[in-house]
Length: 190
Figure 1 (cartoon, rainbow, N blue to C red):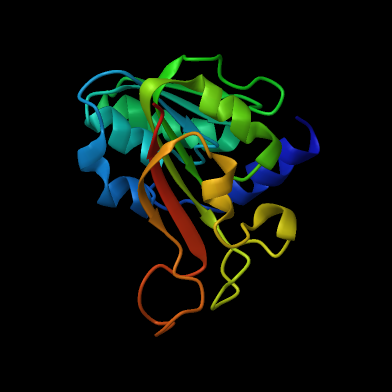
Figure 2: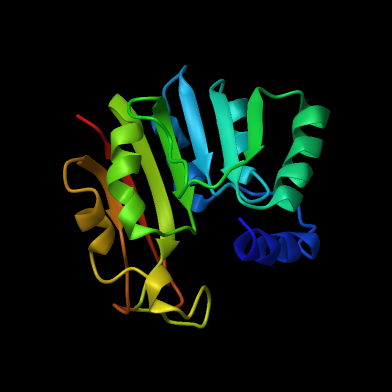
């Protein structure tokens, strides 16, 4: 992993906040199944993984940062949750086809990986995705366009899925209200 792992290790060494789940997962957690395997991809400190495990799912949490995984493991031990946290390069080793029931991706974007992520979901599996967009009302998020979604691009990255929820407010209306700088998708594999 090299430079990428070092970059994220340094970020998480200085980020000692309590892990929080992404808003797409918090707001739509009622759509989660009552059992199954969930993957929190690029999990960071594991806020999504913690919420998924507390919902009764068996959870895999993968991140390139060993520091982030160490921080998550402390929470797993204290809360005694069913989470398998691993330092894992998803680009080199994506999840196996039809291996997971729930996939959560927040603030991670690798367009070339999307077909494999779709394939990793079992039939009926649910994708919760939230990341940054090109149309932003503030400087929040990355500046590199490789990591920013174009208008409606998130829908185009998973065209075979049945959309349950999609939101991308972009620059419309009052920039102080709504979901700004990001897009969210909840979709089901049919």
